Image 1 (spheres, one colour):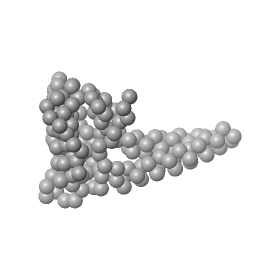
Image 2: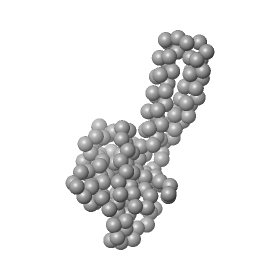
Image 3: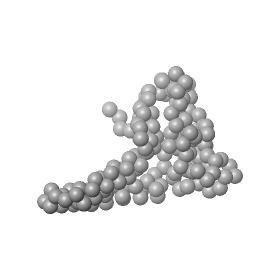
Image 4: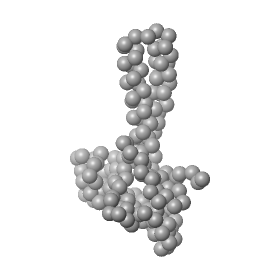
Length: 168
């Protein structure tokens, strides 16, 4: 089976989440050993909180859009959806139902299924005139449109309509 390829950028925010997940794993392991050797309610609570924060940081790190031949995978904080390209009617840009950029207008890339349901991806782009992007969390307008156009091209190729090449 072909490996999944991440298509969205890994910037500072994702690197920070990865570091937090790695450090959190180490801290959780030490706390778990301490809990097993000297059981106490305080250590148990601390271990639980450390494990929860580590799991959240790791999940945030994994959030994104992934591709492999014939399929697209959309990972959000709370859910992972894997869809065959043949079940996708289009890749579209829409106003997001949930956004991380509450102080400015953004658009998000959506994967629209043949049954009419739409899956919001975590890829957002700033609407022109709404200020600078947020690192890799919200892309600048040019990067957003380049990625949107490329995903639309991949969709057309996967359903047999044309060729695609990765964005610059």
